[in-house]
Length: 519
Image (cartoon, rainbow, N blue to C red; front, top):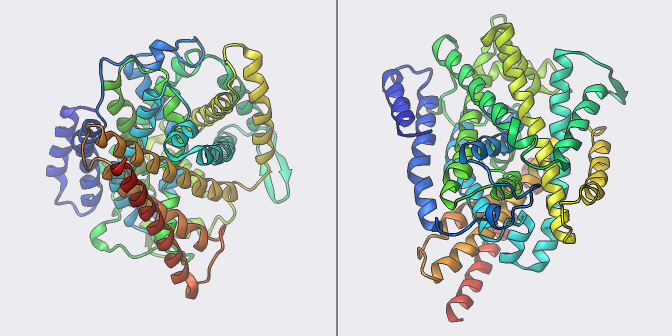
């Protein structure tokens, strides 16, 4: 991603802007690229990189987790680690709400997700390669650190479960193996066990043996497959693409409101707390702070582009000549015809096979399968590091790695037998709640940095998205079906309570910052 690519997208937009079928998509794509070269640079400047400072990869090299690697390799690994099912499954689920999904992907990525990922990675580097709970605890207090350790582990177990069930379902469609009937759900148990065995290896082996060696290949594959879908969608597919100019009204059939539901459904494609658990893994491999913008902010922008492509593809592909339904309405009809099934996985399969042919479709699906698998194992690896940091255990002896990893494996395997859609919903809220704490920790650090000679108002870069996501997560747990599920006539109460929580956080920060000024 460089200035030549930025110019390419701008020229492409100029050539096609008169085509109503792609105005929103092209503008969104250009904004994401431009955002990296403008706001991303500003975030880097506000943080204040120090190219002379030695990174933990150089000062703590251990051959297991602290291993120096080249910048391009770290970028592709980071992109693959944070991608998973989120920007694909989440984007597909988010487009059900309508073209408003495009706005959240763009502005969420630039002003929230990119800032979140950059701060979590760079603060880990500055603090010696520590895990996310320690980053947050250092800024928000010991009590918060303990809570974040628990929340992070719950999130990572839920996420690994979703990233185990999702690809297993896709692989079962490609090559059916033994299934296990659990209630009304048929679990592709053979594929689950195969993937699980791989997870075990990637969790305990040194980071450069599997992750550093093979993940750049899968990361590049995922990018190429997304580009392939985009080329077909823009060049040959004639269906009309959802447009922001057509209105931002809620298109979701179940009547759940866009705010906060869509902002949680589209997690990894805009902002994701999970990314904060992954950034420290690659922070332990960076050899210079200057790499941070490309690796952390850049990988988030690449993920936003991937989410944009799949949201547009899902909202464009489906058309039913008999009913006259097409676009998002066609997608809603397709979902209604497949109750209880993993709709996102079915959409990926149909779109890939139809637009890229049999061979291209299989390659695309393999790319989509590789992403969640390679995020699932790094989620477990991150969980191992969090526990190791808490216990103070040296991770060079493999037995100590296994002592931590085996109980985590058992927890994940037990969660496989819970309905995928239920696990995803709880993961989504937990994921965004974790992002809230990370943003507030970044706000505090940037404020302290400003006091010590940094940019005076730089902390607003983290505080504004922190306030927004606080409102999102507070209202979600009150309104969502998996939360208190307030009826329509009482949703005003949910928004009111969420507003009070958000304002309380703002007031708390104001009181704290005033004390810092006097100190």
